[in-house]
Amino acid sequence: MENHNTKKLSHLLRARFPYIYIATYEEDRATKFIKEIVKDKSKIKYPREVFIWTQATGLRNEDKVISNTTAPNKLIEYITNYDKDSIFILYDFHVFFGNKQRPADPAITRSLRDLIPTLKTSKVRKNIIFISPDLNIPESLQKDIVIYDFPLPKMEEIKSRLNKLIVSNQGIDTSNLSEEDKEKLCKAALGLTMQEAESAFALAMVNDGKLNKDDISIILEEKMQVIRKTGMLEYIQSDMGINDIGGLDNLKKWLLKRNNSWSEKAKKYCIPAPKGVLVTGVPGCGKSLTAKAMSTIWQLPLLRLDLGKIFSGIVGSSEENMRKAISTVEAVAPAILWVDEVEKGLNGVSSGNDSGVSSRVFGTFLTWMQEKTAPVFVIATANNIDKLPPELLRKGRFDEIFFVDLPTFNERKEIFRVHLLRRLKDAEICAKVKPDDNKFIEHLAGITEGFIGSEIEQVVISALCDAFFEDRALEPSDFEKAVNNTVPLSKTQREQILAIREWANIRAVSASSKENTKEYTKIETEIDDDDNDKDDITSSRGGRRLDV
Ligand code: ATP
Image (tube, rainbow, N blue to C red; front, side, top):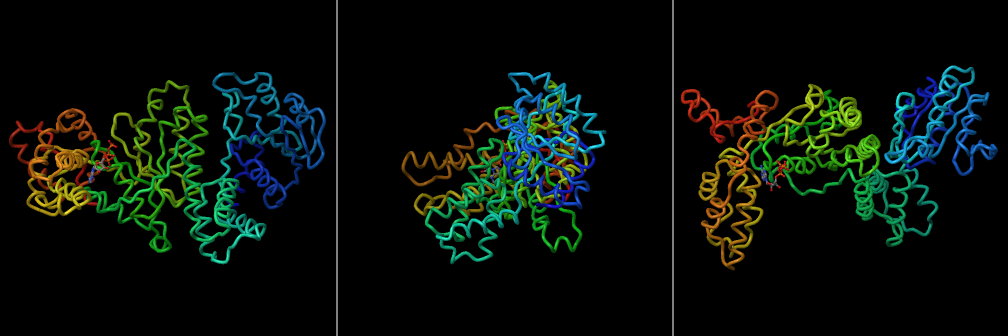
């Protein structure tokens, strides 16, 4: 296991933190990890005895069961009186810490608090470590319990377990499994607990009695299932590339420049690893599309985090959810974490009406963003910037804040081209409308001023639907009809768009290049002379026009 993690836990033990909480399903792995630290003289100077407690068996030291310790009050009494250097690992003690329906047991929390001075100052060194699958700390002990994030297994650990599995399953044909394939299989299993990884390998083996590089898909499928089950993270598979994004050249250029930022070559240039970007702006203009394309461009897995679910409390406590999500993404790293609609989950942070839970969880996320060493790039997307807490926008959180505005004329041309090329494939259907007909594309871009990207896509779909319904080839008029039937968002949500532009003018960089926004620079100069046009939504732009 990684040095950084052993160091951190040994420091907590040596600094006599009385209560350490490890939220994990992997109690065996976590216990083994603690025992290894305790055995290592360079980490823990004074040898300690390690006790394990469960409610079913009471306290155990190696094979010896300590009688009359199943009840928590008896257990605490035993720990209080024990006079040798020791560590007490308590499994599932969280059941006494209450939950939303039931308060914590006051007698137990009181006696735990009474025990603190003994744990901190007595001559013998004692710590208590709670290991539970759920992170659940009662309010009265919030300040006394430190959470230790137990990491998911790293590459070497998984590889060593896979080697053991291969040895113990002699009947499995591994003749086509090179060392490189093995690495790939293990890489695919990153993000799983050891037990999950083992099950995935076992599944791959029993599938056809062989283990080879073709089994990567089975492991990845298992991983997607496991990640989906968390309810907060989703593995997004995307075949969108840079050419699927029309316009947004500035943003695309920025992302392309940062490709391979974690490579050995980048290290030679001493380039700091990029932290992430915040992409805000008009809905339906390609923010999500950019996140998906990034994963293809950078060839990194894309995990979408649903902040709303983290805070909803539907699946576990918010704190636990956030920590689990972070540790899963770190285990999969290098990876891209896409925080979709970042403003959605953060309502409680500004309203403060959930006794600080949102602020605490959000704080965990911000600290992680600032301090993360794992190669995880965060792309946060937001529509409603009013709801974004200022802490999120402070310098140093994101490398850049981009604003995506209504597409310009040139950008509309590019977006039309993307969607026409994607859908107009059949020669008969396209007899009268060619997907690469520049003149027609210019015409379409000209009649769709104020349309957002998704409306442009809908124009193409709607034209195709009409032709399909009447069982005939596409006509240019199908597109014109679709345009005329659309009331663009820029009309229905004019005020909101103007407001976010104003916001973006100070805080964000335009996602479109200077070249693409030239027409607006010209119009804005004209507006200075003639104030009448000032409110026309298509005659101004949001975001600072910088070329990145
Ligand atoms: P929201 O915030 O409402 O989710 P968004 O900005 O994330 O909006 P997308 O989901 O990226 O918007 O866009 C919706 C769809 O519209 C995309 O899947 C794509 O088909 C089309 N689209 C939007 N913008 C572009 C663009 N710049 N180039 C090509 N297609 C686009």
